[in-house]
Image 1 (cartoon, protein in one colour):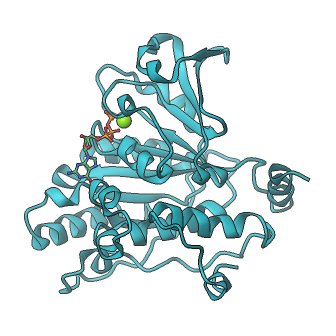
Image 2: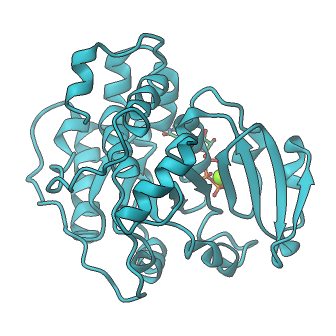
Length: 310
Ligand SMILES: Nc1nc2c(ncn2[C@@H]2O[C@H](COP(=O)(O)OP(=O)(O)OP(=O)(O)O)[C@@H](O)[C@H]2O)c(=O)[nH]1
Ligand SMILES: [Mg+2]
């Protein structure tokens, strides 16, 4: 029995869709979506151009490296992976990238164009939203949660399974801890009940952290990745109707005085969902591998570390 079949059967028995969780990275132009996809994919090579050009949605799925332009009629045309920025946006519904990163064994990643990009009609990526399960919304710390972001999220959030995370990116650009606290307090107030968690993150610091655990944690990545992986391997079913769904808001905390902003601003975990019965030998150990890989480690966790993950 293949891994896919095992996952499909487990998903079907729980009323979940027969595919890996499809995670979309959404936000304004230059918020850090493509940089975040690089962080999540670890060392696996994604063309650098992806971060610097107007592209339709880029759907990244597990497999041997390859790229296809998917037309509005569903036709897939092979393209050179280095030339994905050459596709004609008018003719292309999305670019499909195959990538061998182990992260993609637990999810598909969809790197969306900037929501207010004047060169890109929102219809282009809105049509892909129906295939998305959950969202990591990237909002840039220096201009966080603009009105355009709030309006777009109101339009699309009901199409997700509710396991959505708001990441306040580029926090390293803020001048002080106090500024960060102010930004986070405002964003949490304005988005109350709309995301399960709000995390501050410096994506570039996280990528640069390598094996340095202190830097990795200080970047905000440790807390964010931990919760993200939890949602990816234990996803909520997606509602069938387009009715706005009730999202359990995480309780709002008072800002803390502590200097560790990543801890201070993390909201408590929502109540635990019933654990998915994927089988202890398939997806769950992968979660550990994905986490450790993203932390740039080569050592495998001790047997005791696995106990809490089952
Ligand atoms: N200082 C800092 N720079 C960042 C961070 N995240 C991303 N950047 C930089 O911000 C710029 C834009 O990042 P991208 O990842 O291309 O942003 P995007 O959201 O994909 O942008 P579009 O695809 O154009 O909508 C790049 O130069 C990144 O290196 C961060 O956490 N800190
Ligand atoms: Mg991008």
